[in-house]
Length: 520
Image (cartoon, rainbow, N blue to C red):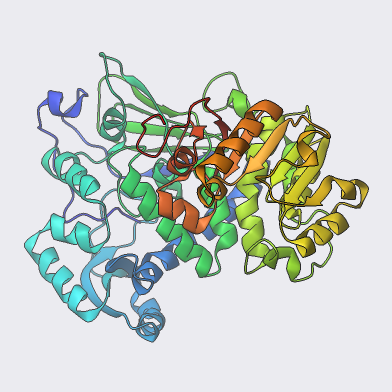
């Protein structure tokens, strides 16, 4: 699937200073070749990538029906259009052809293939409300990239990046400029280490795995991450929950892009891609360490085959098996209260929300285990998953609702006495017996629902009785605050890292820092 553009870029004659790389005056034909590191990696991930790609084609236009974007681009054969047009019409969408393209046979191409008489071809359609489709068609014919990008939902910063890099500089691969924009200073280097949320990682696009349809301006572009999160929600709502989990997992892995003499190599723990890029006399490298690693990945001393230090436990097969079993610890059927006690409409929704919290908590505990306190534990389902995923965890919980605690005691029969009915902000027996916790789990929003004195008392107990504090939040709380980091700060806690992580370790400062950053 080619990235959207009006015409193939011509030879790059822009000044080198505007591109931060020295380019040569030739361009190779478009190609993409994939080599797997092992049969096991191919057997595990090739079918998953195929399903991710198929899901993405659905999400592109379903996002229009969901109101996430005004238009989408769809590519179908004349025969497929008869079916697809009916599906689009069923959700109130119109479609209009904008061009014919040849069939390249490549999983990804940077430029469209011209249709030739007598050869297979496909139509490219714009899909949307009838007025938006008409506006898009006019913009397409006028070469108005800005309007096209806006209708497709691309962030303004990324539309400007596209204009400058793809249109003005006529580059066919935006990876290096994207990396340059993501770092403070180049200092003459031709190797850049980048970070950022997996949603903005576009380096898997040659393999069909991407969380956004556009070329982001940075590896940590906030509007891109917001757009990706909305598209992933559309995917989950459409029944592609498993595919979205795989997608975000893949995008979290280490990856290295390198370019030399017009050929790019994209190395990942499970496969390597060779493809076309802008021709350079010297080698340029972009590395993303990542925050995950596949069980089937090849291991080595150098990137991207080196497991990140902080994930060496969580990347192990045993840890992954623990997380898988943690979703349903004993494989038994669950009563409806198992999810509804904790405010979730379904067990599947709860498992999706709990998974990153369990992973973060298990990684924080490592193999040490210890007493873990869940403040506002509901029925103890989160702690049940954690005890299955991490060795040596001794669960403790407190909640105001008597029925939830009864359910928690049923889920934890061996430690039933550790679950108490009570106000988590009050001075209760848990703070004296056992008196010390290896980890406390707390949703920061709870501290915003009470007065400042009671919130300060709880922060003091967390400081005095807990080795570590893990904060987490779901849905509305994250949307309201603009991310976990901001929510924690409002609650007087300090979290380092991405706003877009649903769970993270926090520190409890001696002095309360309010949402405006002033001490009080």
